[in-house]
Length: 126
Length: 126
DNA sequence: TATAATGTATATATCGGATATACACATTAA
DNA sequence: TTAATGTGTATATCCGATATATACATTATA
Image (cartoon, rainbow over all chains, first blue to last red; front, side, top):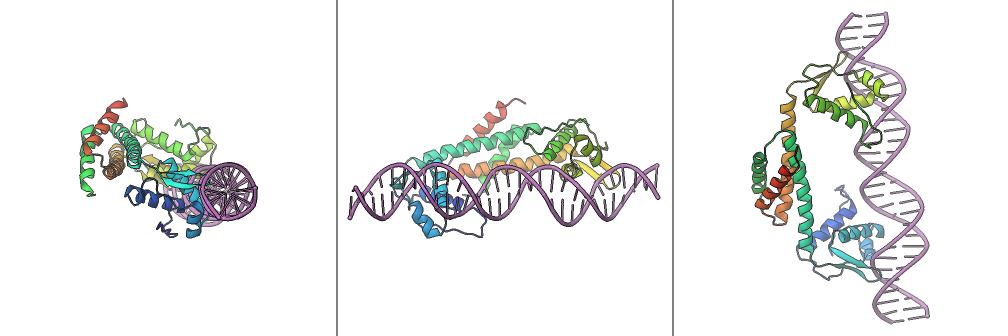
């Protein structure tokens, strides 16, 4: 488990952990059923508090990526990608809703929004 | 100048002032060249500090809605609606960009985004 | 059963940004 | 000169976010 904590970045530690583990799961480097390092081990290794690793794991659990069992450990859950997709869709919908609201307030027509969306979607090659 | 401050809302005072004055300008209740109440007057009337009214006016100035002159007062600027529209467009573009990025990460096609946008645009009657 | 591993819960410390302020200063108009 | 206006500096306060220590609960296993 190669997790790298950068103190300089300004990004919170627990967030760095969450992001890196999420990425590993989404990229398939961690698969369903795989055991994560115990909260204590990871904390020891990163020289941080158990509370912080716990917080990271809690977030991963809330997002449906892992599951933790007292006395046993934490493990990668199945269905990650589908779940992730659903959650992202909700966020995307919220963003589009706000964009639409603002647009209407300024009398910006739907077609103009569609055009912008097309440009920014095609623009950034992934 | 009817400005109503609600302490219960949790919204900061300076924000409430900004929003209400912006609305008055956009709705035409305040027109180009109209004088705003002096920072001290408004502060007195609302029973708050001059610093807070100043902060609100600063924000309105940054956003191009008004202009302040030492010793004279604060006045409504012209070109508000166009400027406002431009700024809103930038924000909208940023939102659409992030939505598009997230969508691509989950392999959500552009057409699906377009559909969602169409729904949320039509949905909330303005 | 005893021990050592695991995750969990409570209470606390710290930091930083956001909000609001007082007071002194600078400029303009009458 | 006076009284109005906006401005600048330094400060107080609050609150959420972050991170922690310590004690507790559960599970596996020697």
